[in-house]
Image (tube, rainbow, N blue to C red; front, top):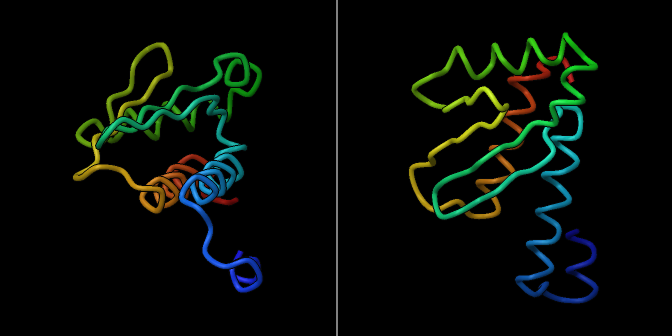
Length: 109
């Protein structure tokens, strides 16, 4: 991306947000997450129950990851997770959060 900025100049904010979405999707692709929503300082994750049901190992890691951290994450029986960040979530925060979640669920990858 730095090379593109060198050639074309600074990206518009909307394009930076699009790049952020791509980065987050790539990082979370092996976690079974089907949706990420950000509103202010709240990040909500929704897992694909079909994928989790087909992969019991992944399902167990997802459950263990969030059940073992009740002060940090709210884990609902419908496989939705709510995380409250200390400030409004900006694109960099979201990418770091995606990296952290990926490492928690799939520590080897």
